Image 1 (cartoon, rainbow, N blue to C red):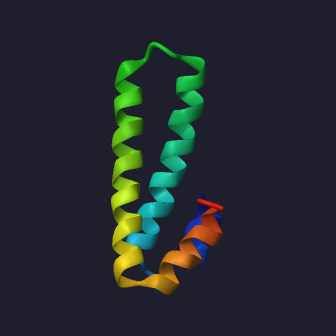
Image 2: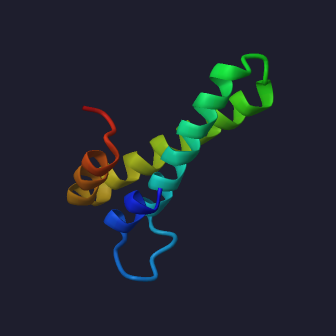
Length: 82
């Protein structure tokens, strides 16, 4: 997780930029996906997973509209959408 964030930071104390939020959501999505594979009846976690996926999708759309070079960088660093 730290390696992903370090590669996307805009400056040394960056904690809230869109790029960092997408990296944190990606980690959360990976963890929740593994959890739901084990516990298929855990509906609360599946709702949390859907919220995280939708929020990451909105942030990616924002980057695509406003910062195209940053959008491409995030996709390559996090291995999203090939």
